[in-house]
Structures are given as structure tokens and as C-alpha cells.
Amino acid sequence: MIRGLRTAAVLAALTAGGSQMAAATPVEIVRFSDLHGWADADHAAALSVFTASCDAIDGPEWAPLCALARDGTDARQFFELFFRPVLIGGPAPALFTGYYEPELRGARKPDETFRYPIYRKPPELDAGEKWHSRAQIETRGILQDRNLEIAWVDDPVDVFFLQIQGSGRVRLRDGSALRLGYAGANGHEYRSIGEELVRRGVYDRHQVSAQVIANWVRRNPEAGRELLHHNPSYVFFREIDHVPPDKGPLGAMNLSLTAGRSIAVDPEYIPLGAPVWIEKGGRTPMRRLMVAQDTGSAIKGPRRADIFFGTGAAAGRRAGHVRDAGRMIVLLPIERAFAMAAGGRS
Image (cartoon, rainbow, N blue to C red; front, side, top):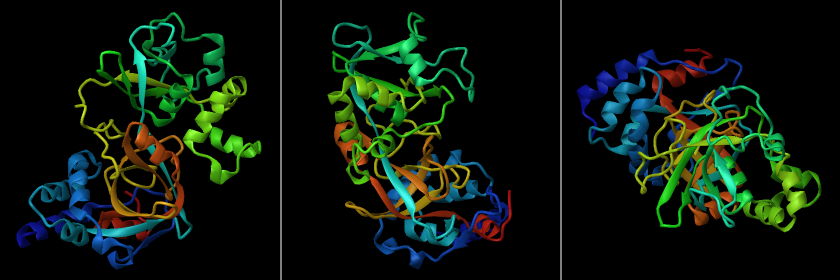
């Protein structure tokens, strides 16, 4: 249980909080009783994930909370005493999607089966620089014969979706796995090929999922290649050899993600490491306390989140069907929450 002297010290330390958002963004503090399903949530599971990345959160107001979170505190009491739920961006519905860590079949060297390369970042490519587009890279052979290949896989569609996810594993012939993490991109804005299929009238919006898109591209090789080029963004990878196999991929905080507890957010509005309560609708409703531990090129705005579902094909199927409306509410240290509601900035 939380002890009185420690509680007083933490509350005093929280007065340094502030907001990192533009004052024009609507901010409303709500009550924990307004969070649907809060009383029945697994607060302890969320606290465990929060604690794992707590030290990496920017801002002095978080340090005393991190110390207390490791001090055997009651999880629900911890969140209710030291945080306030904050609705950012107004009452319009949030949009939830899902992502996962793909597992591809591959090899260190190419052969007749494994012919499609996964590349390291070219040394001349600087962060934020706009470089060659996907179509230019793949049709002009810009990356070929430069010793940039990390591995080779058996399906170009898998390479494309690996880039969409930003991390993954390549299962080699000997059964070992090569883990890949995001290393950079070509600076082009991400464009959804699912949205493009809807625009072309190939599918209705409710029919589109990652698996549906992948199957269409494989059935239509020439048109499929052209469709993949609709997204000019191209992602490069690096080998990750310090993360145990039983841990999730590294997120934007350079820490392992937890299936069903980690989400990607827009850090312009939600601090990385902050707890976030989600109320997702759709075929698989979800009421859960998550932790913002990742970002994504398509995750923009205060009402947008990507839920991490885990590793492998089963996780991919679950993630691929998620495109649901709902509500997301960030839990912030008390003084930061009130400063944001008052239009302050840090």
C-alpha cells in the first residue's frame, strides 16, 4: 500500500508538471468513474508495463512516480492517487488500428527460394531527408550490389508489410531467428494501399484487412506491384541482437513492447511512457489500461492509437482486422494534467 510520507513527497514533486501541446488543442479532465470498465481492469498488469519504461519518460515530474511504482504499491490506488484522466482533442471518436511483429522465412544468402532482400539504411541517407521513392528503389536497382542486404526472404509482399510494421523476425533454415528493428526511412509520407483499393472500388472499406490486401497483391502480380508502389515510403532495418527471444520488439523508447498492453501514439500529444485508457469498439471491444511506448508514421493526432498484438501470424490476423472507433484517455501526473487543461505549456 502507498505510505503517507512517500505520498506527500511525490505530490509535492509533481508541481513541476506542464503541457507539451499547443494551447488550441481541446483538453478536458474527466473522472476515473467516467472510464467505462475501469473498476474491473487489470491495473497490476498495466503497472508492470508502465514501470518497465518509466525511467525513460521525459519530464521531472515522472521520476518520483517511477520510484513509487516499484515500491510495492497497490496498482489501482497508485493510478487514482497520482494521475488524472485527460481527454485530449475533444469528444470526436478516436481511431484504433493494430500492428504486430511479423515473422518471415528467410536466409542470410540468396537462392532460388529466398530472392527478395531486406536492406540496411544507406550511409548517405540522413534522418528526415527525402530520398528515392519506393518505385524508384525497386525499379532502378538503386540499392543493389552495395552490400546493404541483411537477409533474403521468399515473398516481396512480406517485405512490404514488414516495412509497414517497422520491425520483425526472419526465421532462418536452422531454426534460429534474426531480429530486425527500424533503422530509418526514405523521407516520403506513408500512403495507405488499403485506402487506395477502396478508392479504386476493388473493395468496400469494411472488407479491407492486411490479409485481404496481401492476397489480392499475390493474385495480381503486375497490378499488385503497381499498388505497392502507391506507397512511396520505404523503410530500412538494423539487426537487433540484444533482445531476448521471449521479449517483444523494440518500440520508440528503445524498450521491448508488450502484447496487448503497448500502443503507438502521436508524441506531439501524448508523452511516450504515459498510461492510456482505451475504450475500443468493433467486433472485439476492448477496455484496457495501456502504455504509450511506440510511434508510427500513420499515427497522427490526439485521437489515434495503434495496438500492439504480439509476434507471428496469429497476432497479424488479429491486428489486421482492427480499424475501430472508440475513446482514448491519457493518464497524466496531476499538475501536468491541470496545467494542460488551463492551456499551459512546458
